[in-house]
Length: 198
Image 1: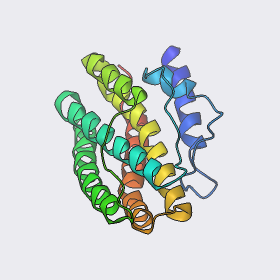
Image 2 (image 1 turned 90 degrees about the vertical axis):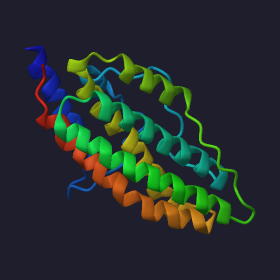
Image 3 (image 1 turned 60 degrees about the vertical axis):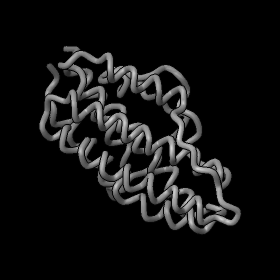
Image 4 (image 1 turned 45 degrees about the vertical axis):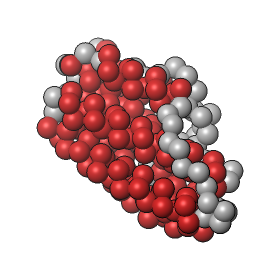
């Protein structure tokens, strides 16, 4: 009974992430993530803003997102039981490493240059601790549940800044970095439905 209820809640959540034509739409910040949290317990701290007011904040948020993507992917490569989840983690690791290097170059090309000093937020640090503590049978769903949130928030950050950003090199980076994030988010959505509850 619990399994059926969780699956129903998960499908509702996943459906809500797509618009009428199937495109990704940013989540409403006022909506709760209760169904995702029920399937994959996550951090309790506030996640922070999903959009940036200016170039320095964009660099701060995007650098932290890349660092979180790298660290969570490393954990998944080590701990995931499902081969497809490990493959997603490997793709994410490559994509976020490339994105981090490109972001650093774009920040340096700004006039004036914007400092690049990636740090993890309290929310991201807590999320990594959740993954480290997850039992083997629960790890894959915990990882995927976190990525549904983290990759969607990063996609929102990138797509918004690509349109409204105030620093041209960063706008170009945001536009170029969005496609890999969109692809990884789509794969995470597929996998969390495919992986059976244990």
